Length: 64
Image (tube, rainbow, N blue to C red; front, side, top):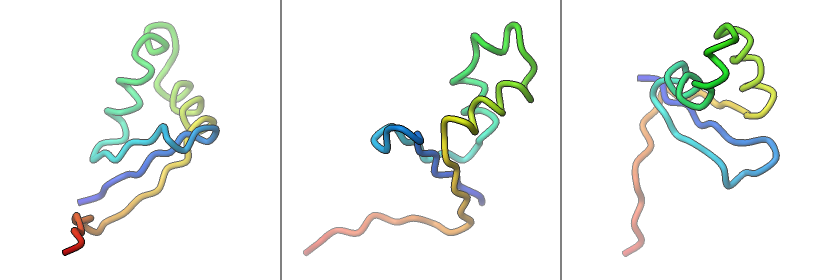
């Protein structure tokens, strides 16, 4: 299953780890989608965020 790491270009502390990139974009830009197409909003998203895709599982590592 694909996972996406999404990091704000200007603020690395603003980041997300999601399964569904389309859903994230739709939620983040819901107001803009009222008067713009998804393609336009998607372009805005990619101007503001770097997206990394992974098909591996990320597990928590605890120090003993």
